[in-house]
Picture 1: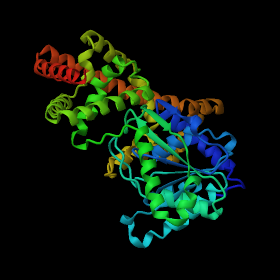
Picture 2: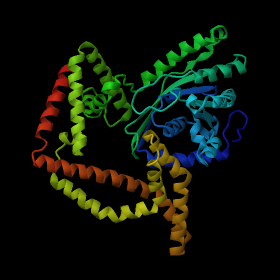
Picture 3: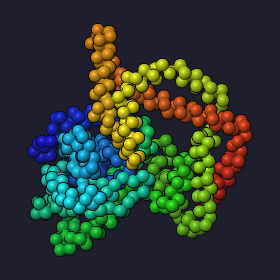
Picture 4: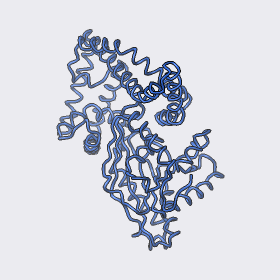
Length: 453
């Protein structure tokens, strides 16, 4: 893709970015939070370093978190090289300004490809552009931060060397956070920390580059960890994650946080996980017993196909039945929405059956929808409505309502699934099959509360 002087983005890039933004921001996600946007330095070389938990969607969320009026700042991302091998997708990724990063698992002979990508990225930095990179060299499947490779620091100091260490380059720590990784209409959060100017390291770097890289890498890693939810006790991760998503709602409210606000819930979760870590250090056996109980509770709830939050709600069988009737009335519109958006909804499901890395599934949904599903759906609806009615206005209207039909179909699916779980809960409760589970839940929560107090 051609880059204009000064790192300014081209018109094609801006238009395609707006198109993807509409799909990602309005159709796929429910709400997006951006915290610390005031920390983003302007008119300077900027290297953004973030954790990596949701593959391509991390990059899209970060891209749209940065206000870039009229494309004045050219933004590039360094991403996994194997994605460029996918037919057509690789071409589009190059056009969008994405650069491939080769890992040793791709073969030692391919590592030389990083030199070209990093050189191109460093040139972009010196035009006051922005490059973001994920130094974990892979996406995680949990809320925890892996080790950082030094590639991003080699990139930063290579840019500094090109300008004879005369230009300030900033490294901006960042994190991404989600209410859920895989389903549509979930919330996403991007949080920026304070920028780190690396000119303070220039003189020492000239003498001991590796020592400086090691020191700076540890500092940046720590700053990213402090921004995100970094659960270090991976052996008990399932129990901790279940605690923060269930009891954690009550904990947030007790401590003055809004659990419906993802930014506030992240602060509360970090505080809760920190306290759990402190408790384990003080009394490992006792907190481990609590973890085991919560893990057993989580397993049983999953087996029954219900939700923990139902225990705190007064679910009426009459209300659930009324919801089911409402869903039955809305079913024809749901079927129309699914048919109209057939190319958007179903091809990613078929593709994901062959994608073993389930952390890529959400990215496949977005990529397939943007590159093929939405254009095909628009063409099919435009032609079918236009030929049926003989009206161009009707055809354009049909295309205009497609996104809203897609959102309706997604929301209908989620609401209907939740309703079926509520119905199952009411049935099990009436049969007395939840008594032991309710007792375990109460005892486990009370024990945890006592420990926290």
